[in-house]
Length: 176
Image (cartoon, rainbow, N blue to C red; front, side):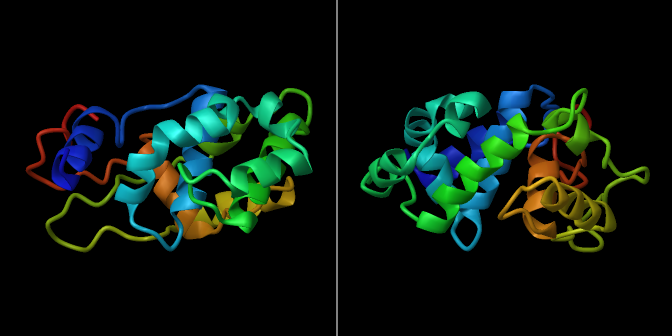
């Protein structure tokens, strides 16, 4: 399958659509962190391998990973074998598990949804970060999350539908 077809399917069926489940938000946060410095198509093509390697991104399961799991992941050619990103994902799962009573990752992330509308293009360029994504990154870091800067936070906000950055004229823009 071509890169264009992979991107098109992701765009048409998933990107910018509302995501509220804890596991799903954790998966998007993790994949956006792995994408940092890489092409998104690399992550899309490896997504099923990531799911398999990281116990379908169930936070409790990933939080239980130990050094043997880190070594297993570092030798898994199906995923991005970056030790810092692997360890950050495990650490982030532990941070999810250690959130204060009554707080969830999904709820925390959604609490930073912008109050103003997203850019509508084709005018100004879609931003790489916003005041809200910077504040979300700070909030996540205060709770022990890693690899969650403002750009990664904003990419996740786009992916889970907290902002609608489909450009004007995009058929998805009206129903995202």
